[in-house]
Length: 148
Image (cartoon, rainbow, N blue to C red; front, side, top):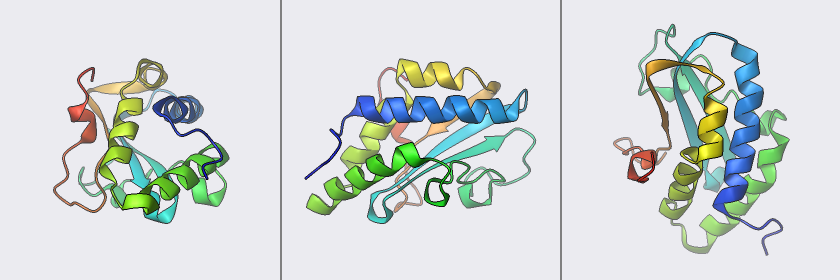
């Protein structure tokens, strides 16, 4: 039984708070990308950041200098642990990650999360993404959301 009511608004609130906290860590550094890694089979959510000055392949998220900056499993994002547990329970029911990824993309493109991202100094080509971690050719689920 889910302890927290799982809904997009809960995802929005958790993302908003963490992104505001993270924005304060970087001052005027120019942000190029945010990757929201969603891994229900590991009960993990990761926020990774790529800055314009970072000299790495954009598609190699694990090589980004600020890969998994949120450090949920290392104690850096306790607010996300219950949500990660909820998505694991949902995933266990039918092993379908797509609805979960769409929920995260919907939250990532919501007004309150967009406003939190606005606290960063974003590059002109800034983007936020939610990808299917099991598909190396995954499209950005944020692109499926009409208000993005």
